[in-house]
Image 1 (cartoon, rainbow, N blue to C red):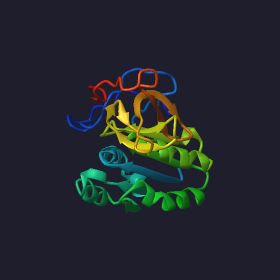
Image 2: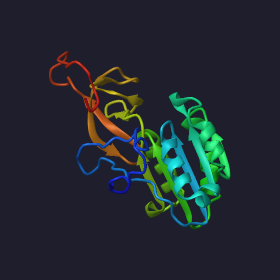
Image 3: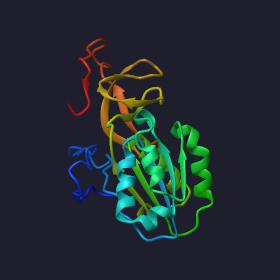
Image 4: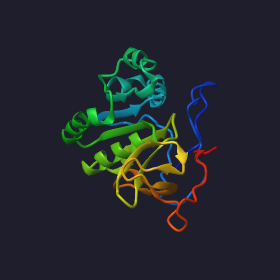
Amino acid sequence: MSRRAPPKILTRNIYMSDFKFPPSIKSRPVYGVLEPRPGKSHLMIADAEGAEALLRLASENPEIFSGAHIIYIPKDTGETFVERLRAAAPAILHVSPSYAACLPRLRRVLSDAHMGLQVYLAGTEGLMGQAMVEATNAGIPHSAIQTEHRGSVARRMQCVHCKGITEDVMTDPFVCSHCGLTLFVRDHYSRRLAAFQGVCIDAEEPGNIPAPVELYK
């Protein structure tokens, strides 16, 4: 994933869902700003406010957008961006209820891809991380994959003890949805699993658990 670059200011609220993550360890993903690139085909995958990044691309380069295959997961934004994406007239717009539901389509598109495919990922870290895994497993080079974070800062977390994945973690510490341990939210990230790592916070002093606080607050 590319190093975060300063956004190009187009209008006051274009980046209203953008969030600048504080500096961290090397394994923590960092994100950039999507830019239109020349290529034979364009695959765009976004969730929730990630649609804002795609709509900006549409305004900057309609030709690339008109040849794009978009997979979009609205999540809790509902219909807010769906009609705007449709009105921008992409070649294909597939609206999915969840990442799991769109995964067969994503894998088929990647398996049919030819050299020169450009991949654009926008939205939450969980969505981008999982889609990145699929793209790289399909042989898409990192240089052909762009990312831009938008919207929620919730994390996809793996418990290092039971290996279970908890989605959309917003507090630190949090309770593992699989084994029930209270876990510390770490910045250590597994690209293979597309998940951050959580470790038991009261292993040495059982019951000594601080009150949870919202991430980045």
